[in-house]
Image (cartoon, rainbow, N blue to C red; front, side):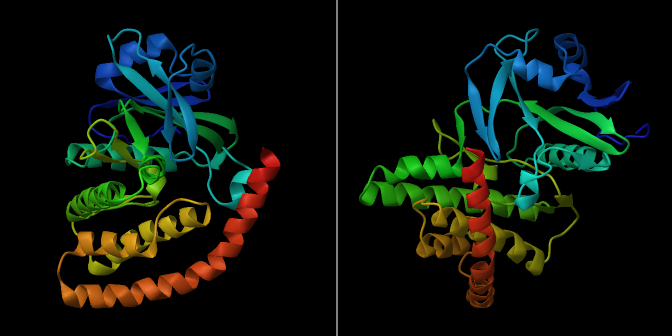
Length: 294
């Protein structure tokens, strides 16, 4: 792809079947370290330090030319049932570079997210490619299900209040994202990171299929927050300690005290619950495939 459009401050480099979009200020440092071959870089990493991200664990790699700075290389993987057949091969390169643009716009707009350092595609055959997104490490961050699991070990009033405080902070971060015109393409618990040393710091990750516009209407906002609630239901099926009341608390924290909006949203919420019944069949099939892979 010879006409890759990238955000301001990034360079595009073509090397054979590999295309790299790289932040100018990190260009020499990352190229010297071999960023054009992310798979080799990950395999050669001697660190036992890993980051728990949306669809798995990935190594955290020190940036050799920068003291104490580290990067996380996320290999793009499919979700849903398709991941069991073609887990990491995509068609057309525009999708990754669109994610790079939206993620960078979000960071520049003050949305709490990890700054992207580079995006790399490796052409497999014809229009088919594998993709990698390289971002700065968020030290001491863990995704929301892991934090909720830790909270559940602390039964009683303290654990309850801590979980509600986390949900309120997450609702606040999502509201900020929407107020600044960002619709998240896969808003779920695993794409929300919490700084475990400072739990008031919430980060939103994985901007694949997301978009940025001047204004989000009520319907777009509602779709996004209900998508987040649906992910709570899915993880509850897998044993995560979240309840229906937690979901309703999250919705109230997002929408505030607007009774008209909450009345409409409750209707949307009930329709979503009905649709989840059909989705549970798919979730069970995915769980069965996951067990076979283990």
